[in-house]
Image (cartoon, rainbow, N blue to C red; front, side, top):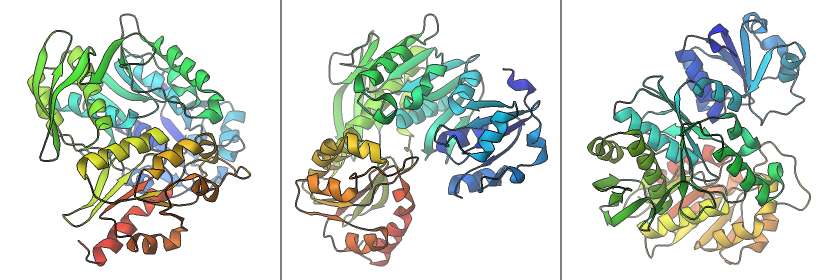
Length: 452
């Protein structure tokens, strides 16, 4: 497909974090962009501010005439859209070019030097660090991010077109449309079993992705994964390894051992060893690309993170409120490690909204074990996303599996009251659903209480 011949791009599910980054790309390249989404959000409003027309009802009549020309229009959709969606069905039945988001990314990146970040955890943070490092170091890069970068207040970085940085998403096997020059795999824990069925099928998909590299491409893998490549790890014998690690004023200070030398004096401001590992892989890929050490050290020190990834909402001596996107047991464990490292001995309240009935079912025991480690637990009802309910799979069922007796199930209207009743000086909100929409209300309520 020749993207140069496309004049109009219509997105079905334009408010998705990955979809909206693509929409921004096409706007920046002079295309006329519009789309549908189910609900109005900050992301859709930001797109509308760029001149993108967005509507919120599945209705062919709401699509402007120019997007009904199959010769000049590309239609992009997210796999989260159901097959009976009226607009999607119309475009498919009338010979439009209709592509998944991942296929479009494959087209955009195929003629660039492409960095692809894969793994069941850490993709968004690693991609945003890598995009920031390359951008700050003068590389002509376009980066598509799966979250809103605090540095750019966007999920899209455009500093040139020679290099691209993308998330290689394993959901729906989307990452198999890519052919990167450099790729990394941060983790291969079981997830998306509604798609893969078995963990072995997911692992096989990562193996297949590793074979998608271009000739002479480089694969970076977390030490211990069952693949061959350039390894990375923390304080171990990996090809790239964090060494001489210290914590100074709430930041990590460390050196990086490469296959040939020691690079000294890096500073990284995000807490948690999972984030430190993400920073290391971004550094390793940048070093292999040829970015100078001193430029990288300066760029890393200026990195501020991704919204909803261990994001401080309140940070005072008396109260800390942190929000995080974690929605898998291993991600919750990583958040737990980070908060215990930063606030040893302090009581921690975790407010968790499970994401997907199938994921809750498949990992219920692991979720219960992860959540039981916190001092107090509040559960919200399961966020369904693209799924219909599964009989017997509820938050009340999950609550019964949590061994910590300091637990309760709360409905959203009572959430702020329940949080205020806790004496915990550290509060976490965790989950990938619409719990993120509650965060600002919780922050304002806590600020109004003047408990700071």
